[in-house]
Image (cartoon, rainbow, N blue to C red; front, side):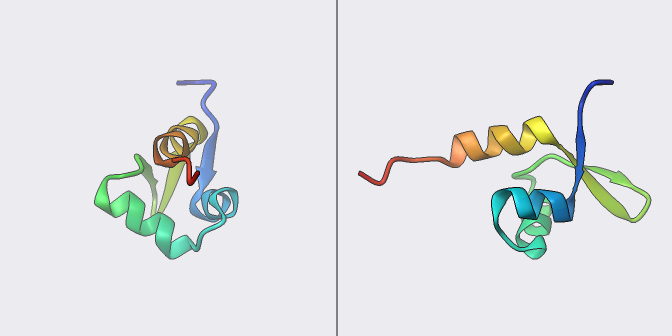
Length: 60
């Protein structure tokens, strides 16, 4: 866990190309694991990648 890269909600939103509110919704619904640091959330980069992998589907 010491080599894990933690991202802010704004960084996750930019990475996923969604709004910060969408990221907060994913965190609060339990779809995206996060840790609370003070009054803000941090998300492990690998958890974001895993969420995107699971959410991907072929439109063809």
